[in-house]
Length: 470
Image (cartoon, rainbow, N blue to C red; front, side, top):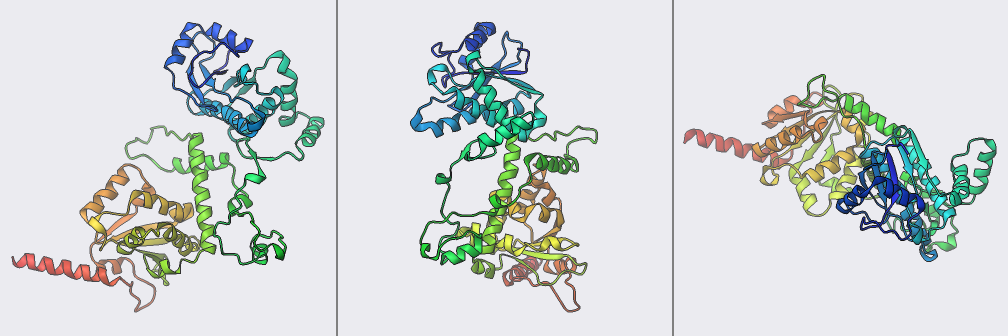
């Protein structure tokens, strides 16, 4: 078959085992020649549910995808179904990300001796391919499912359910799928009895009536001590589909030019499956922080004034966010990093509503070794701020910078790590200069500075005066 990629059932050791091979698989190995077995011996190993890739050898196909299907046992039917689903996801993901295959021929991932029922395997194949195409439809021209003649009827029925072509087939599909369990974005079944039923913050709800008000789920008052499911806004709200998010990221990337590239250099704006999952993970983490900001008590963290929002705007109407390195380090060393991020999410939630944007004042004096916070914390803070906060940020004033701090910021800027943030940095050497840069609205209003920062500046002036006399 003249396609870009063709799949073939394999085992974890990537060695050809003739026991359990179908007639189609034997034909595929025969046409590919002995070179295929040599490539399989040196290819990467694949676990059950995984996929490895070799060249097409003598076949018209450019690539052969070796998929390791699960062994079926009624006792572990759910695990086998999930593993088979992973086979198709791994196969199609490799086609999208690694070999850019637009036409794919899929054979059964399971060897015959693994005894996977044909009717159940057909439903998993149709469902998983349908879910994958919903996310990556533009990446394929055709996906051909190849089956033996005796398995044709179950596969035709399964694909009629998930790919109805007319009103009659749509009605048949609805009747078959009615009452079926829910499936996630990859086609894996979501089992109600396996869902987590632990509240995100135990002890916050004192009774069933409190739970009713919070979630809208009806519970009898007599069942106050019953275990109730945790309800998250991530799953209750409508999310933008991955394709739309990919297009948004593409537009953002088109607005940025790499520092080493000429104007005519073409950009690589393609996003992989892993990129899309990273975007989804970032959105989920942001949603979780927003949820915790509504329920958690972080007043003690707020009182530390490590990161806080000034009550007054500056003279051009921008909001002013103040960060103090010494207090940040104290909270992080005390294991309060997560609660600090919740506080930041809560404190800066309304900053994006300001049409003039906002600025950050970072007091570096008092930090250990003169280095900035860890890159891991900066990334987490970047997520906590959210994309709208990053777009409305106008400037970051770094007060009393050290050479180590400047070198670290320069290195991160050169590595294009959060460059949209670090290219807005302005270094300020004295508190007096800072108050000239950031003048608050009002005649006699001046930006408040922590006492240890002013003391640090006095010490610096004193040391400089002593060195002049020496």
